[in-house]
Length: 213
Ligand SMILES: O=P(O)(O)OC[C@H]1O[C@H](OP(=O)(O)OP(=O)(O)O)[C@H](O)[C@@H]1O
Ligand SMILES: O=c1cc[nH]c(=O)[nH]1
Ligand SMILES: [Mg+2]
Image (cartoon, rainbow, N blue to C red; front, top):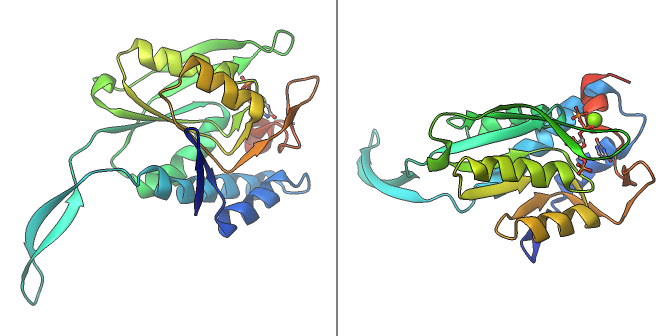
């Protein structure tokens, strides 16, 4: 159950939408918030991987020989954007257990709202891999656009962006800077407030995952 328009895939499955409502609720505590982010990520992984290629092999069941399909050997790298993206890794790994994990550290300067890079470690030969970038929030799109550019600068061609809540402005920014990158999310919210937080959004995802406020 997914709406696709202009390279944006919105997950409208009832189980995902229900969990998004719990994430948005300010009364949801850090433990529940973390668990919900993991569960939503796992459900999203199911759709994000739907174009993965299959190869036919022959095996023997206890009853008979048969032809069956397995995933074609394909390199996948998950790249969470620190900190909040970390909350999405375990859920994704439940569905894609062979994925490697790289990390990009970015924070948004409180005054300028511009992304500041403080860490980047991608697996060797990341350029041979499909990269799935993880960050729960796409607000102005500044962090997302910069992260995608770091990854492209390392030669990666096949990139997907997976977030939980996007803003209209963030979607437009990624489309403008990186029209080749599809966006997967559970909701697109209309507004940003004066602090560039998504409205209604869910607040500061990093602080809610790690209990830092
Ligand atoms: O689209 P943007 O306007 O760039 O904003 C989105 C970014 O802001 C948040 O990170 P934050 O700076 O709060 O860092 P944190 O994950 O360490 O809390 C969020 O996780 C994104 O990375
Ligand atoms: O709404 C927002 C915007 C940026 N970062 C967040 O965590 N939430
Ligand atoms: Mg934060």
